[in-house]
Image (tube, rainbow, N blue to C red; front, side, top):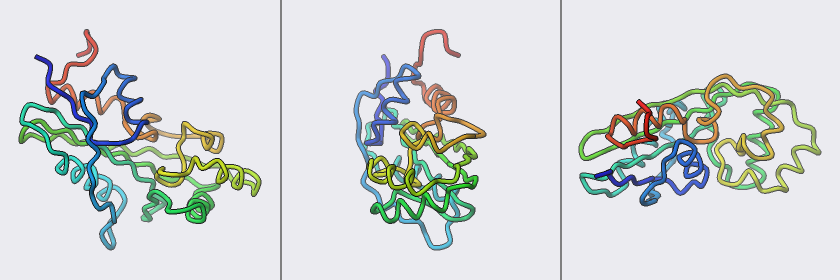
Length: 194
């Protein structure tokens, strides 16, 4: 019998990315946790901790597989989370404009007492933004609920001339690593996949 898969995320992007690898969660249970970084916490350890804490906050039976993830935008040692308002989104975008930054996505999977974890770091280049581009983007409201104030798949994709790493990880769920962890937990993927 195929184990039930629980997605511990309310992100429609993660549902879509799972579907791209042929996976549909049986249930969606977004965890409610405090996502405030600890003083001095660096972006990668923060992102890994968030994925793990989300995983541990999702209630599941011993035979259910739970998948959680966290995506963090890092500008050097600075964590750029989801902006609180358009002013903070503008601040984040202006800080990123014309520079390279890292997008870290950590994923965590559990089945019973066993936990599997991976994190993926992608380097992203954002072009310099004109005032018109910035204001039009802010007016679109596409910055809401997005780490760093943007989603590479949305209108802000026009601001990203180059990445080095995983496109799906920048979107919020690295396809290759997610498939590997689900297989490790005993979740069957597309027939013929090893």
